[in-house]
Image 1: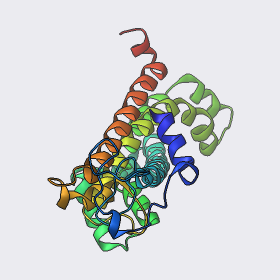
Image 2: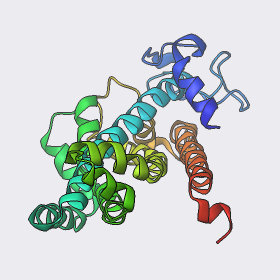
Image 3: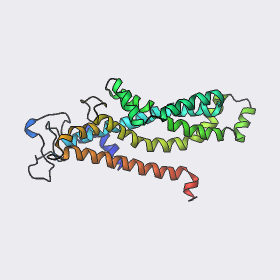
Image 4: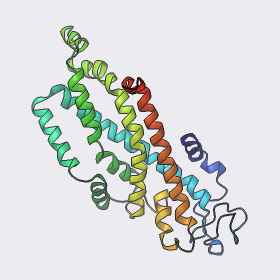
Length: 265
């Protein structure tokens, strides 16, 4: 399923049967092809402006995956850096950084993202930055906890005795040992970011309306749920199956990278 979503997003300009933004009031709210009254060539029906649902779902996958992956990269970069510095140096640096994490973690993630998004201008880059900056705490705490353990191991002490600098020890000896955990967290967080983007778009705080997103499609169809269920339900199903598939991949990846889970301990 994940591979199918990725391929659909990449090949959307080729396989989409229609322009996702092409409007036609004559074709508004046409049902999917298996229902009476459907329009030939519009397999999943149309929305209130006569736009093809299938084409919009395919192009919406591009925005959702892009935001999910890029926001996770921002989160990971920020959180891993803070976790490495906090865990390795400890002391006052650790105290200050962890108190900042405590303050941010005390505010529900979605509420914080909505508050920041409401201040900034609606754009793709701003959505990525909002989700990235507000979601680094998990990475920071996990990395810090592992660094506190890894920094006391003999090979780190040997590197320090050999004369290696702090930067070399952190990035050459400590970072590779925390990468498996970061990879698992990042994989699982992609699905969370897709849901967060859908929530922001549903509230009108996501990307501009000119860009097709699954959350925006759900929001567009909420007024027609009783008469044209396909406008909201179909992109909602796309979100559901994509998030479910990514979570399954993340769980399997965790089992592969965690030896204790692989042994059944």
